[in-house]
Image (cartoon, rainbow, N blue to C red; front, side, top):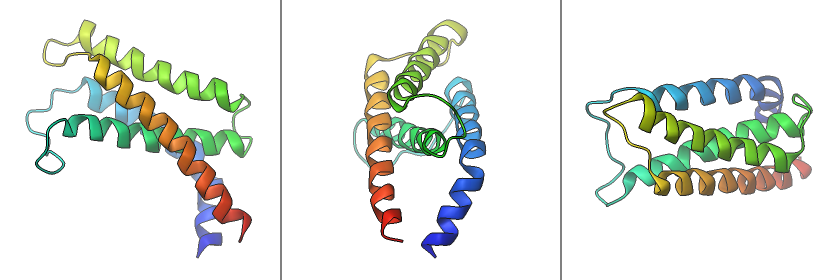
Length: 129
């Protein structure tokens, strides 16, 4: 089963990375009347940011690792963080119904680092396959 997942990721990681980046951009700038909260606790919006950027960074980092994009991992991490900052600025400048937030930028950055850690975990599992 792990070999099937590995093959699937190798074939589609770059498409997932691009698709997820576009999805985050659309959801970040769209006017969402009601978006379900995760659980019943404060700052669940930050959990959504962390989760979204963890997945985004995982797909970009695995694409980089597989050689589908030619850039150093550290540079890619910085680019993904910059992408999150740019989206927050766009929310402040282009919309009247969304606001940019420093805590969102921090949550996005934390998500990027969690995505990196998840990639390291996946690498350990695959080395055993």
